[in-house]
Image 1 (cartoon, rainbow, N blue to C red):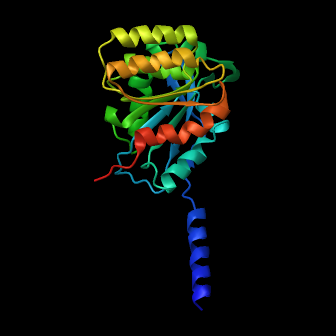
Image 2 (image 1 turned 120 degrees about the vertical axis):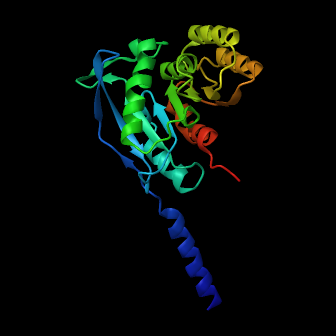
Image 3 (image 1 turned 180 degrees about the vertical axis):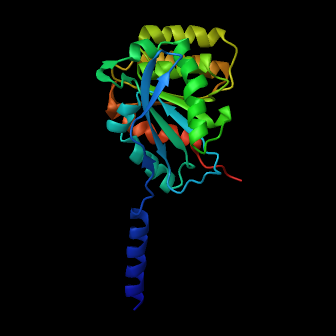
Length: 255
């Protein structure tokens, strides 16, 4: 009888851990930007069980379609929230492509410290999301994330939009020459109220300039988590680090 009870208990635990709360991912939502003069689209992830009275933190993800397709980030969010490794959050996946012609990629227009692109977030996208979803409107609860040029964009938002974003999540930002420029700007700029996640691969991923950028951020006293992994400029590098970046910004508050 004791053995039987133990077996039932083990089966119950297995079933409990296998049941994972599933968030909701919207279809593409179109937004006509007056700041940019063209339309964009985005998708929104909301965790299971949210209430209209919630004030949830948010992460805004440039190259959002890649994070969903190649990074499987909606499932990562489900797992991290279900297991209690992060608090419930809302994620906004912004597509960098022309919604009327997906072959037209606008990354090179949008991501290189484009003040109009930052203003689009600040004046159009953020108010839209805060109006339609139970989000926190405090900058301390907002993170901007991106990879490669999108990671450079996150660094730019630190300089252009820190009054609205407190978290920068950068996976393999930019290229070597652009990283040199980031080092110069962040070195001469007064320390900003930012929390930063920065990661690189150690195979052809601009890691040498990335380490110098890390050192500048550390010298300035930023709250920084730096990770370097044994891969290149690809999803073998980025995908396994999605949970690390989420936990850095959204770990449950301990009393």
